[in-house]
Structure formats: C-alpha cells, structure tokens
Image 1 (tube, helix red, strand yellow):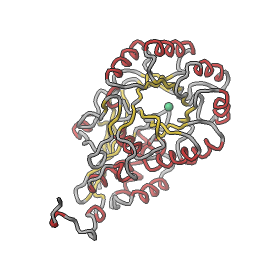
Image 2 (tube, helix red, strand yellow):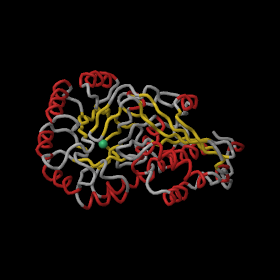
Image 3 (tube, helix red, strand yellow):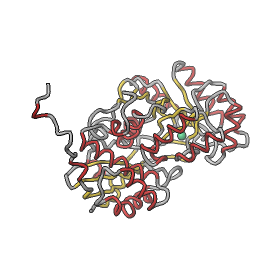
Image 4 (cartoon, helix red, strand yellow):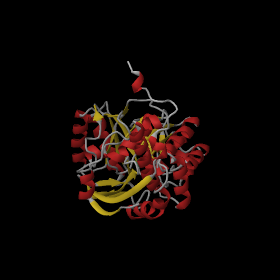
Length: 390
Ligand SMILES: [Mg+2]
C-alpha cells in the first residue's frame, strides 16, 4: 500500500518541464567491424562511422542519441556532424527538452535533409525525458503493443561459407529469420545461396534484399527465379526512383515486395501507396528522421493496407534501442526487426550492457529512457573528433 506521504501532489509540475538543455556534446566515431559486407549499393570493409549526441540539462539529466549515416544511402558522417554541431546546436542549447516536436520542426527548417542527424537529436531528447520522468521511451511514444520483436540477421559476407557458419551461430541463439543480400554478384550466386539455405534450414524464414542492386532491364526474369523460392518478401530490387518498375513487379510476382530506399519520409509513403509499388515498407529512423515520423510512416502504411518492417543502418546499440522502442509502440511494424549489428557485427558496441537479444527476439527494455546506459569511455576510445559545449 502507498502511504499518504509517498503520494505525489497531482497538481505539481514535473521538474523536467522547467529544465533547459545546458550542454550538447557531438562525437564522430569509427567502430571496427568483424568482417566485410557486400550490398547492392555499396560495401563496408573495416569500420562503420556513427555520430553520437549527448545532451545534459541544467538539472543534470542526460540523454543519448545516435546518427548512423551510410555514404551510399543517407549521407556522410562528416555532414551529419556538421548539421548537429553547427546548425542544430544553437536551436537546442537553452531550449526546454520537453518541447520535442517544436525543436525537431525548427531543426528541419534550419537544415535541409540530414534525417540521421534529426533521428539522433530526437532520440537524445526522448532518452533524456524518459530518464527524467522514470518512463521508458515506448511509454512516451504512446505505449507498448509488444514485449519482444522477432530478430532477422542479414547475410552479406562475400564468403558464403562464413555466412553459413553465422547461420549456425544465430540459430543456436534462437534466431529464425535471415535476410539474404542479393544482386551484388552473378545471379547464379544468389540462387545457389538460396538453394543451400532452403536445403540446410527448411524451417528458416528467408527474406531477400537487393539494396537497389538490379536495373529494370532484365530484372523481372531474375525476380521470377527468386519468386519460385517462396521467400517472405523481396526488398527494393531496383534503384529508389523506379516507382513504375516496382509497381510492375508487384503485379507480376507472388512474393510480397518491400520498399526501403524508395520511402524515406511520410510523403514518400503516400506516393508509394498511391502508385502501388509495394506490399510493405522498411521503417528506419535514419530515413524518417526519428521515431515519431517512423510511426507516422507506419500509420500511413497501415491505412493503405501495408505492413511495416523494422529496418536499420549500420548502428550501435543506441540507435537499435530507439528502433526497439519505436516498434514496441507501433502496431503496424509487424515483420520483425534487424537490430543484430551490436551483437554480431561490431567489434565493440557502445552500450554498457549487451544489446538485449533473448531466444531470437529483441526484448523491449522497461527501464527509464532508452533503457541501457552508454559506455562513455568507449566513446572516447573510438572518437575521430568531438565537439563539446554550451
Ligand atoms: Mg534494405
């Protein structure tokens, strides 16, 4: 039972509402990875670069966010760093951290583009507000509709034997979904890998992602071959701008088609539905510019009869956690998530505890804010540059 003295005054204003952001640190990191990866639109070799934001209020409450740009997809870490450090900083420092929507609108007006920088700032604001209020971020986003999210691991190693070993490892961890990255080498290589995966792991849920790797000329013949394997979906076979080609494949194939690079923001989602290019959409906070706009995209998708998938970029556990909270609070994102890099791709994640994967699922944290602390010593160890200040 709660004693009278423990009850809060219902008319009292939470202290965080009068706090101001007193300090903003921006850190550009290069994090070593375990192996090379080939994707239709580019490769990753030694390291991934991310930009971490740390906010602190005059009351001493801290929040962390992460931008995970990829040069061939959303942009460069250098430009992201500049957006945050030079252009967002004067808007953010001195502002009330609870005015999230107004701050995000001001940042979108101040700098064109840079959805990853927007995502990092929004994440840090929600983390801060969650820690101050004692609530997990999913509660601030509207409440939880799932406790755990099925995890998919992407297969993109140029050495397929290594990928087969990875599949053994992840299956032991209970993972039941893989996404094969295709369209990088010859078509036969893609079919051979699918045949092998189907033969060795008949119960595996297999998805295919071209990362824009095909040109519309001759794409359909290849996609029909993939169609025959009955995979769960085929993601973004052709470059983002080819809406008409995407719509034609959707009509020609039995396999559901997923849009990724074709849909960044809510306006893209409206166009994708009106032109009938896909059956589902990969929702990524690095494309949408944060969790709230990711939820907006998912709501539009749901209204159009589409389903969402929790995509990501080359992220650390910080951005993975933000994606996890968004999906926890978004009923339309029902195809699982791909937040595996912190566990199986980076040499070192920047969270103080392992990213929460149990029995092939990401477990939604219930601690305040994003739910897991950041290892600030690791930020210093892998920093390429940093900017601190008020
Ligand atoms: Mg993709």
